Length: 498
Image (tube, rainbow, N blue to C red):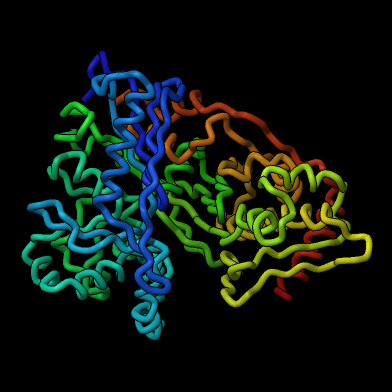
């Protein structure tokens, strides 16, 4: 269904962990408005993290209204709505009223860890779960969160079996609300993060549903990442009838927003931690190096898969230098300090401040600094911290290259720390490959916009999207291979001691 001739703009909703960002942009990627609304975080017990779905919805509505006002455009000009979202966060609501039966359990929530540990005693089961879903058995994902809510809200299991309740990750909840309760749907990228969907069939798996005690009746329909799921109805500030036509989990949306459409292409988002996704094409690659396998997106009948790895610490290491050690007042000052020396002079920093993520998976590991001498200065320390962030990404990407059997062609980068030119140059030197930073750094929202525009024909195909994508700066490896080898060796020795 093509949009009305008067409708020429895309509204992208980026529903994140701490707030909602709404962008209004045209097909040339000119951003007319960007608005963000934060919402409360709830921590009822240690390692429990909750969100109120009503507060999330309020943040979405307010952001839409403010973005339309800032762009000075009528809602009638919106041709399509795209959604990207914090993944794994789990909500359950009543189908009749749309009211949540409990606060949503956030992806960070660890309350179901004992249940996962109990299930993990069965090694055959954990292997089967990994084979079917590409994931590890962990409280991070949605399945055990659904079971917990159904078991801890009086009468919920009975109501679920009667078909009175609806489960959804945040994408599903937003489509439900935007459509006035007409559509109960998720896309394959979000469904692949629940521990309940088979990667091959792209369907809910009956055996997994039984394992996690999740009734089929609560589950949404699984759809592709770019199609018209529903039309708006009763949304404050928007006319009825706008197609909701694009949907993907935040990291998959960032991969799409970076135009990583070829097998072997990858992106790294440098946030508080980092997320790396590598496109593996139509091939399901089961990692032998402790990466996750996930659906990247589905367009029509064509499914694209990805490998995913994350480091717990990236920008957080710079924040620690700023707040914990008082090295500088603004995070951006680290680059100026680090460039006062040409090299870290053998100083190595392992940013294991909260353990090590992929591919090491050592929760007990702790931060380590080595190679200090009387000649070491604050500048050497700052440079070593930036290099440590780059080394974590190096380890993940080398593991992905082994899994895929392909050398990385180029790495697209985004997120706050990607603005640090020294860090990006060193990352390129380590990987011996080109790094590319885009002009449009809101890559997550951009991915949602691309998928939505594709769904209503604003972009004809992936080639048209690639033409829209613009580069800001490229970094090419310039360090001598022997110097890189020496640094890698020092890093590998330090990691073992962390």
